[in-house]
Image (cartoon, rainbow over all chains, first blue to last red):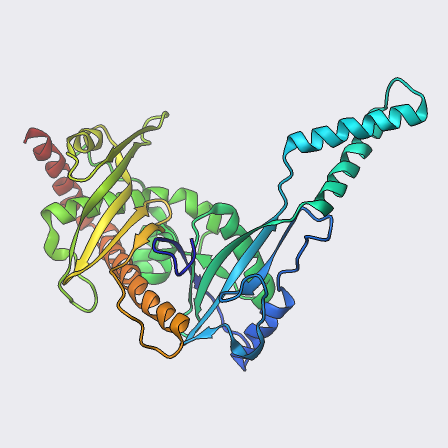
Length: 205
Length: 178
């Protein structure tokens, strides 16, 4: 579900720190250095990187194309090749039979079987295109927050890793504790209470 | 600040308490629910509420679904020690309406639907649409922040134990007697 969908999921983050000036160039650099590279013609099973919000299958970050109003809007793309296990099994059996016939033997060692399986997966990975998953994000640089349009755990973890690698800024997920600590204007005394609070019991009053 | 992953698990209950308090406040203490712009709004439970009892070793979960569903089982579950872990909310400002699910443990939104958008008159249609949508999502983000801030303001003070907990306890008991 992307930003323009009729129904969206949002995970909110606080971005700590500032980029070096000029900011737009620093963002462009971070995006270009970690742009998504296609793996359809490679034997990699998975890849991730930044892509354009408006053109996710042909990313281009030239000319501040990711700037909408005062927001940076771009997308995280995670491509994964999923080879059905039955297809792997089919080619594994074919390769094993061929190897036995070539070597005139009745059995293969565990190591030989392992090598055949890896070979089969590598060959199939070259033939099967990766499935793209696109997750939009909006970064309000001035207000230090970022909205990621997915609640999926794996996608959020990938975002946190890639964002930190690209922009060298910590991304803090907003959940009850971080919201209380970072967005509720608590005094030091209140923060001490927050650190010590334990669950309330509404039934035992 | 605490380590993030430790804090996430250690304070999961805080979000569930917030949603439970929010249900109580929507029914019994509506006046305290305000947003920074003081704009009049309404907020009500939509078509789904999930409660979980994590006080005992085993986790007992109850889901109430459906438009205009009765919430008696919810109160029964609260009386047994459950907290609200997920709420579907309907938020209205004037004739504009937002619907969304919110989870206690993360306070993240899902299934967020905003009011209808008119024709975007900006020169760049996509850019105009994005800005319009962001403006509408911002309303929900501000609402959650405002309500959570009110809750935390009560939660870290002594009046939580002396006023809020007894009031919620009384609300649960009285709702069961209806």
